[in-house]
Image (cartoon, rainbow, N blue to C red; front, side, top):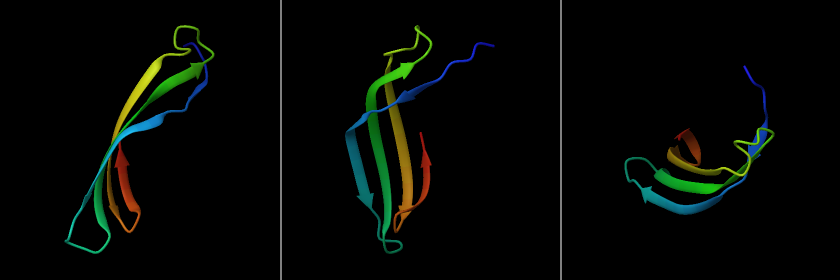
Length: 66
């Protein structure tokens, strides 16, 4: 298997926050983040990445999936 490394630094393009009333501080969030990645593998270097995530938070703590 080939080994390579890289990094990703993107910007949030869309963020939606829904405040719920079941418990204080409960929020559902969706986010779209996009930008280029850098990689030591030339086929992946400068590839555009789009990431979508969902968070379920209470007082800033909770789960995130993307």
